[in-house]
Length: 264
Image 1 (cartoon, rainbow, N blue to C red):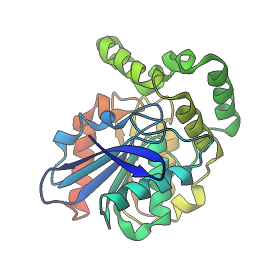
Image 2: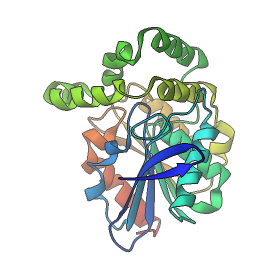
Image 3: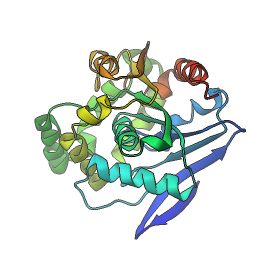
């Protein structure tokens, strides 16, 4: 657990040294914190250092007045990697974290050696969908949507067989600050990264849970197929956050990708 100041805001992050290989930076999803990567980390081969962080208004990072843009959130990521002294690194993200990763790679292509985009796309849903969610949560709170979110985050079998874990992740969602959640919803609502993402040439692994109800596999695969240097892997028996449900399968895909790129 570590913190640093970015102006008046405190940002929470983790910086773990594991060996002598490359550094991997990970950006988490909407309504979560960096603990969603915990099951994955011990299974990654050849990674020397892993840096994770909480977005603004999530986890232990300070909130900022909403709305936000993906560029705002990508700029927060730059503050982090500058703070920990990273000139270049591997970058991964899930959901909105994947959008942040796409934007960062487009804005700073010289710093990203490879990209992992998980359960994400350059544009996720229509603006009206996100505006409806913003209005519903503003009126009724995050708890009012939490059960539906769990159905998108996790496969039916996971929810049935892991009721305690599902309830715990539901708690994490509902304890996200309202301003932070709504600010990130606005960022997704307003974002269309299509032109910049399709112009990326960095080697990219695109992953998606086969039972993802938030960014369906067809959407994610279409993104991978349209990118210049991307490969697609579908993770069976997983929803929107496959690092929690199927860390072995996610790690296997990432390890193979990094080896094939000569990075580990």
